[in-house]
Image 1 (cartoon, rainbow over the protein chains, first blue to last red):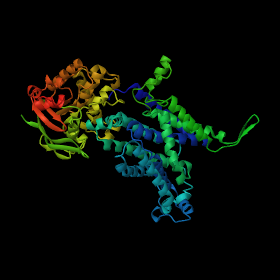
Image 2 (image 1 turned 30 degrees about the horizontal axis):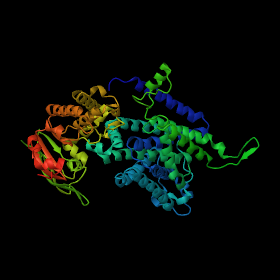
Image 3 (image 1 turned 180 degrees about the vertical axis):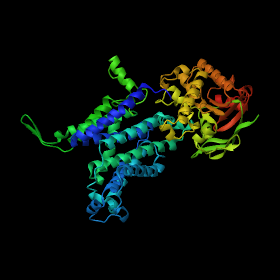
Amino acid sequence: MKNISRNQILTLVFLPVFIGLLILAQAFLNPYYQRILNLCAIYSIFAVTFNLVFGYTGQFSLGHAGFAAIGAYISALLTLSPEQKAMNFFLKPILPVLENLQLPFFPTLIISGLGAALVGALIAWPALRLRGDYLAIATLGFSEIIRVLLVNMQSVTNGALGLKGIPGHTNLLWSWGWLIVCLFVVKRLVDSSYGRAMKAVRDDEVAAEALGVGLFKHKMMAFLVSSFFVGVAGGLLANLISTIDPKVFQFFLAYQIVGITVMGGMGSLTGSVIAACLYTIFLEALRPIESQFTIGSLTIPGIPGMRMVLFSIILLLVILFYRKGLMGNKEFSWDGLIKIFTKRKKKQVGSTGGTQP
Amino acid sequence: MTVLLKLENVTKRFGGLTAVNKFSTEIHAGELCALIGPNGSGKTTIFNVITGIYTPTEGHVLLGGDNISGKRPDLITAKGIARTFQNIRLFKGLNVLENVIVGKHLRLHSDPLSAVLHLPTYQDEEKEMRQQGLVLLESLGLDHFAYDEPTSLPYGQQRKLEIARALATDPRLLLLDEPAAGMSPTDAEELMKFILHILDHFDLTIFLIEHQMRVVMGICPRIIVIDHGEMIAEGSPEVIQNDQHVIEAYLGVSDHA
């Protein structure tokens, strides 16, 4: 369209400002906070892509942990230096092909994404014929297979020992940059004719098919875009935490992602990002409750895992009292924001128009 | 008259149950034909076989000479058969206009990448789709609901919206599964007028299922009656009304006949 809306102008103005802030944060913020912000972006990518598959296309897939694992291991193997690899693989030597293979970060992430998408296509081929719970079980099984493969393919993955000394290329620009790209692609996709078809599939498969919407094609499209970005996010994660092993990618990760997405609101990308950031920040902020503390004369011993108990309770409360999540299916828009300030009406976020970049 | 749809000995069995048995008929281009029968007589099964939801156990479905039996529903729709459902199946997460233009998606030429990148070719197509959707809604008197949620519409309008959505796929043949189900007699009559209006304004053929004989008697020149999956009568309303088999199927066999 030739006439650019106020929304788009504000987004275009905001984007460089945001990138500027990222550069400043990267330069001056202390590493601990940087790490939290990086995790925020990575979890946001997980949640946004899960929303694409479940919130917009209605396919309850629990394969995120598996795709993230694939991305993470590809990125680790392609960025580790030959010396580090030699140190890592002391039990069983690494596959000769991989021994001296080292790539820059950007192509590594692309390959991580493509690898995850390729595996995604392979499992989606049979699994997308299943509906509802069956798809969830099949994809959960897939994630578990990936985890078991990671443990057992020692000459590639170093098995249960995991990979250590990954360079840690991930910084705020990489992680938030990819989040922006992911949001852009997913938002544009769900707002397009293809997105309408996906929502039709979500609302009623029989009617959608009767209107000429190819079920398999559109589910597959959502699945591929999703698994690509999950692979990239997995790659970012490996290069952030610099040590990965198969335990990082257990079921639990998939449940976390479902929880975050539900909290944010099915069908709201803004909600996914907000919930992912809140979740990551809270999880860090709540660390103290896992250590020993005293209230008056009462000493409460540190219980590891308390944070997750609290998280589960919060999730329950959200589901009970705030069923549509933080944002429902509404999206952030500048027009909506301006409306709030001009009209001084609370909680009236515009549901129309573009969103974040 | 040219034959648009031809059913040849279509049989559909579910395990031991024969829902449709050796059903053959021809639907001519431009006609309005009704399929009636008591509950459970196999009317919807026939529609499901035609639209590809079921594969016929035996026999063939031919659309303009092409064998379409067993093809995927979305491909059959692309070939020009659209349908509505007995129970309303609108997309609750899309507004009225979007519900309609989902039906235009199958004619979209742009690939997903050009949609994501908002290439001019896609932008033009999207604009065109919205325009066509609005024109369609307007021609059916639904345009003032365009941006409402479909569930907020009155029942009768939701039925019309289902028909509008089916029309968006540019069908040659429109299948309506009990379009007047759950309507009062006056509303049903209005809907039948609406259907005649569609027949006049769009270049298509309509094949409809109706449970109540009364509703179709006035408007359909040709009626097919089935019972227990078999055709028991075919012809003009007068012929049907006086057919002994039909009377028996609907009212039961009289003892003193």
